[in-house]
Length: 311
Image (cartoon, rainbow, N blue to C red; front, top):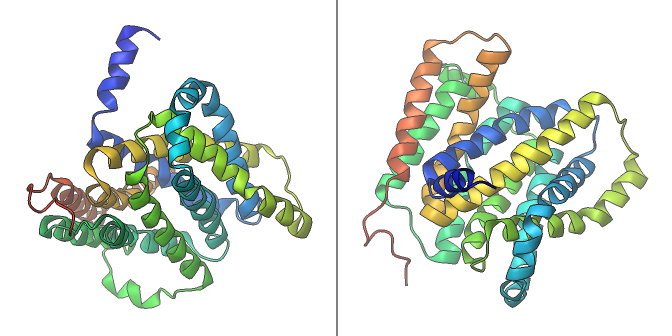
C-alpha cells in the first residue's frame, strides 16, 4: 500500500462523524434487501453465509493483526466470544427472521428505537447517562424519522399494528444495544483483529442452527439475485458498516454514536428517490432537516462532567 493511501485510511479512521454516517448508508439497503429475499433465503442461512463470506474476505488482511493481538484477545476471550455471539450471530439472525413476519415500514419504525437500547445498556454496563443534549437530539431526530416514514401524516400511526416480526425486531435491537455497550470493553486490539475474530466466531456459532434449518426448512436456489444479495450483505452491511461503527464508538462512545441510527431511513428514502423514481416531497426535506439537526446536536462532545460514568 502506498504512503498516500495509508495516510488517507489513517485520516478516515480518525473521523468518527464520517464513519458513523457511512454506517447507516451501508445498512440502509439491508432491511429492504432482507425483506426482499424473505422466503427465498432462510434467515439463519442468510446470516451464516453473510458472516462466513465476510470472514473469508477480511481474513487475509486481519491475519497478521490477529497473530500479534492473540495474547490480548485470549485475556478477554469470554468477552470476545460474547460480543461475537450477541452482535454478529444473534442480532442479524433475529433481524432476518423478523423481516419474514413484518413490513419494511414497521421495521424502520422499530429500528428507530435503537438509540434507546444503547442508552439503557450504556447506563447499566458502563454507568454512562445520556446528557440532556443527547436526549433532546435523539428526540428531534426521531421526530424527523417519523415525518419521513409517515409521509408527514401523523394519523398514519393509527394504522400500524405491531406483529410477531416487530417483537422479534425489538429483541434484536435490544441485543445490538448490549453489543454496542460491551464492545467498549473490548481489548485494545487492531480493528481488523476485532472484526476478524467476531466475524469468524459469530459465523462458527451459527453452524448448528444453520444445519438444523437446512434439515427442517431445506436449502435455497443459487440464483443470480440470491447470490447478489449475499455479496451485498457480506461486503457493505457487514465489513463496511461494522468497521465504521466499531471505530466510531471507540472514538466518541456508544451514546453519541447511537443517534446515527436515525440516518438509516433518510438514506433509504434518498435511495428510493434516486433509484425507484419516488418524487421528492416537502415532508422529505422537513424530515431530513430534523434528523440531521438531531444527530448533530446529540453527537456533540459533552462537557467533562456530563461524560463521566456514574459511581
